Length: 398
Ligand code: CTP
Image (cartoon, rainbow, N blue to C red):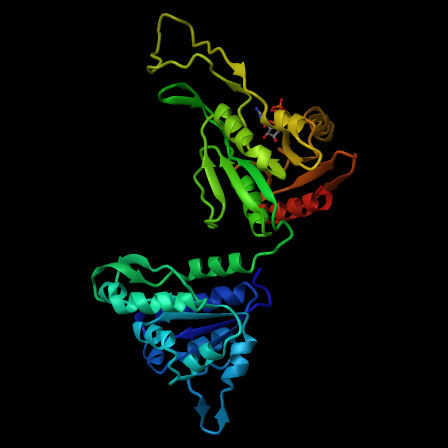
């Protein structure tokens, strides 16, 4: 998303300036071009030489440099995004009032691209009425002021005023520059296992980690879709706050949630490892060991099939994608499932491959289309597999 994007970072005098070293590295790793402008005070907190080396560009800090003139207008026009980070109280006040006594302020006033401001200051300064009004002014001019975080401040006090962490700043930029192949589309993804309780302390579940479903939700979101992610119990989270996450536990709860969102959905991808059976007679108390009986018989009944139900309900404009986990006769079984459940695409996961399956970070799939075509991937990261599946879905999008 950030490949080739031109990011201009303006650093001001604040302890948080050291964090920009990590941010520049992260941005360069993501393929962005980075230029850095500093105020005079910023150089007391972070070395221009380090930033110059990491960004691969000369760090600029003055309007004139012996014999050369820093063209602030061209710098302001070069950037796709300007981030003032950390933005000190002083620079925020100057920006809000149109002052122009250093290169960074001149670049800001010449900017034709979006400008983001990541404040960093002590709690009392952050809460001061003047700062509040300066921030409101900057926002009213169309700038984006990023949230400050709560935590230990440079003063040793604890409170709001910490600058956003570099990883989060990067995530915000990734989202800002996300693709638009699915812009305006509503996507529903199910992920993870389901747990079917048998008593208050025990359940029947499976080893699904949710990684593949989360990777799919993120891949759609990063192509501009509005995403609802319905997930069973998992230990992972998504870094994109814009993804609407609905947590469920059982197959019944997942069925209800999926049916609630399906009417407003353009594409449903059912990646969850839904339990096929549940215990209809859940005990309200812990089932005790019964030494006089040989073992324990559990009566289980079939859960409702979410994919089959949505496959049958889908309109001509809705796309429904299922996953098939097979251990034998893989293609044949997956093809049967594709037709039986009236899906548009079935993604076959093989249990035969050591690099694919539950809990792994890699996967290998075969995508089966309703018209009989198939396409197989090599072993790839779950992120790359997700991107691949999303591209294949884009091809048949109705
Ligand atoms: N699925 C579902 N609801 C269920 C069971 C499965 O929506 N109650 C969906 C899964 O999310 C997946 C697809 O059906 O997209 C296939 O799941 P899989 O477990 O491979 O197939 P089953 O139909 O359960 O058949 P079997 O376990 O007998 O292979």
